[in-house]
Length: 516
Image (cartoon, rainbow, N blue to C red; front, side, top):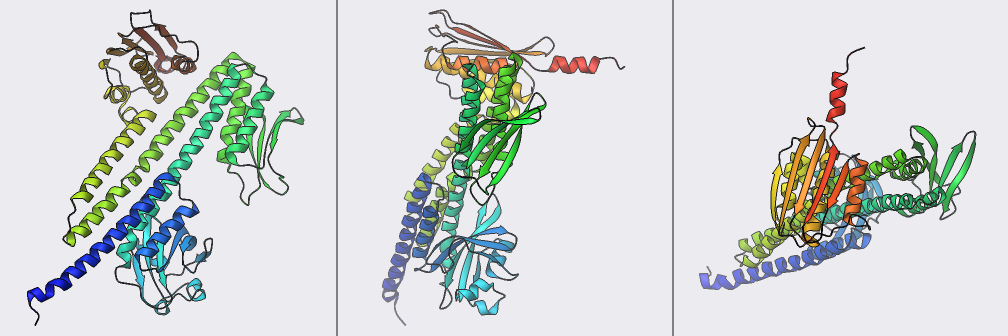
């Protein structure tokens, strides 16, 4: 029987081997995580994840699969795997992929001949495999599949693939968030462009030309046309042809102005799938807004309301999407903590991993707080104007006195009031060199109007004209049928007063009207 001293070298060798494996896995995870942080889940990124996962399971074939429907899987990316990307297969009950989809847990099959396997398993001579699920928003999105043509995979294959499953989730979540950001940015750019053209009183043909140009760019369409329904004879008002659209899919959206169908926005796609109608409607709405603005002053006000409503809606959607996808920012923390757990089990020092994990978590929290606050604070949506303004000024570099005692108001009123305060406070801090700001909000005329007053002790001299932030704020207030005034004498601070109708007066009149 060997002595304790004789057993020590074996134990140390095993520990070193295990630590080396953990270090290699950590390096692979960090390199892929860095790649994800700077790029969306393109084929290169997903292939890189598969390659890194293969290296961690001793070169076994790795395939990334997505569950398209309840019984259909499609290969998304691979490294060494026998199934090429794009291949779709209907999996049978009891198969490896069906078990992963049904249970949401890792599944091992050491001999496919013993289970009801899909045709693709026999086609590619796969003998054994391990499947690890990939979750997105609590649902099984797909799975990593490690396969072998010779025999069972190593016993720790499942645990080694779990970290890469997390990274894949992070990559896909990053792509969704970035796609949303790009889409919102394009929509915002289109809205701003139309608003600027209308403000300059350019001919309607130029406005329509801008709409078809932007529609073709954002939607990636083969062509975009605007057809006016001029009595019984349709008239081509504007068109943008990027590529031949013979045999292409066409999607139409009606252009409705003041309740009547003015014309049609038609988009053709040169791909196998048509452009979604939901993607076309915002551009049809842009055309409707531009035409309404040209027809009357009331049309101009309606256009501003639509622009602002669309911008606010985009901000709310961005807030939701960023919040829902925020957990992917913590994936690095999860990975580091798992590595720390494994290293601690092996008797190693984990202080550096824990410190790095804590730093990542704190930074993620700070970035998330700053991002959400910059878009539209959750406190405003959840608790109302007072809470939203308190959140806004919580970290302000100047003293802020608040006197806000108002109940919950319609969302559009609260949003407009919040951005009015935000713009005034930003001007006080950035330009007026103020040391103190006072914010007052009250209801007037039995709740019919909301009155805001933002005062600072800065240098004054603010000019609402000239394209400043106060100009955009005046447009926003006017679109809500409100009024805004600015008093900013040189050397004597700035007073921004805003009055917004809350809709309470109209509601009261409706309730008090005598029955006929």
